[in-house]
Length: 251
Image (cartoon, rainbow, N blue to C red):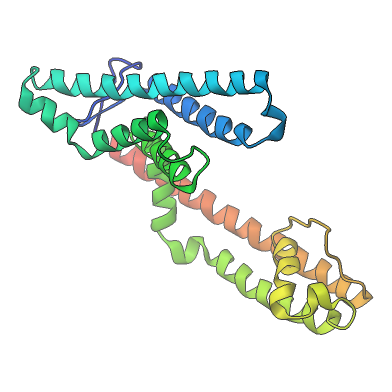
């Protein structure tokens, strides 16, 4: 895929040119609007005449946008082949063209309810594609480098965090199982408290009752902070390495 830097509002096409950055931003915003519309449609507060008018208007706008997006990309592709029928067929039957056509079909026909697993999955997949085939691709390449350059080193703190989380679940199970069997009656049940403590989330919905259990939770919470800090430092180091390699390649 290649960028069409001359026009930030370019729709993109199905022959290899990416959409402009401004248009990509609008496309992702519309997808966010679509997901918000689906979420609000399940809220009873909007099950009124005024609420339904608002939801229907938002959905109609989204449908028009995706139809225009599909037709625009198809027209751009056709123009790149001098409006030959073979060029039209290449655009129409391209894999990304068929994906966009499927999205238009799902939206317009409502064959699948918009809040169904299939429809949501299609919309999210479209959002990921729109993100990848845009200026955000530069960011995704950076993330890919961080994930694959040296995963054993970069993500060792996650491995350590997993091991310590299991150890904490086992320890809190031994200490608290007789005091709160509902939450600490097994190692599996203890995992919830262990995970939210080790990741420093700390919901507070489950707490140990013994002094030893509280000391243990504090100790493991501190270890969790250290693991997260190490992970952050490793990611920053990989990001710095990417900047150095990217700068060297540009020069």
